[in-house]
Image (cartoon, rainbow, N blue to C red; front, side, top):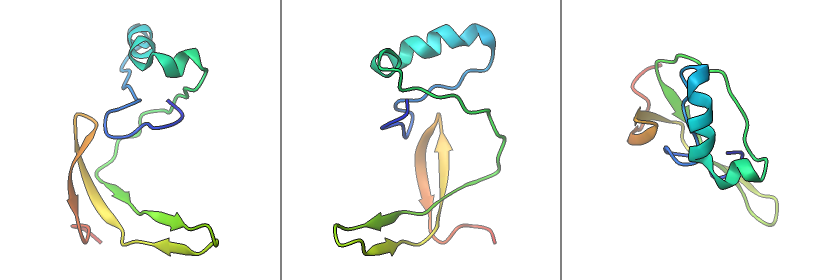
Length: 85
């Protein structure tokens, strides 16, 4: 889905055209509201994440970059600092 998709929630991996209908069913309400999008699968070796936050005064804080390790589309481990350069 376009909103609230994280850690295995609100997203679906589709490996072939035959899996599209089931993926759309699993996303339920988001599909009904037209709030889905498709991304091409990109093979990767690691995922990096950085939280950037802005308060009501417009001040911005950027936190350290972390390495996230996924299993079944869910973040299981966060490594700080990342294990590679």
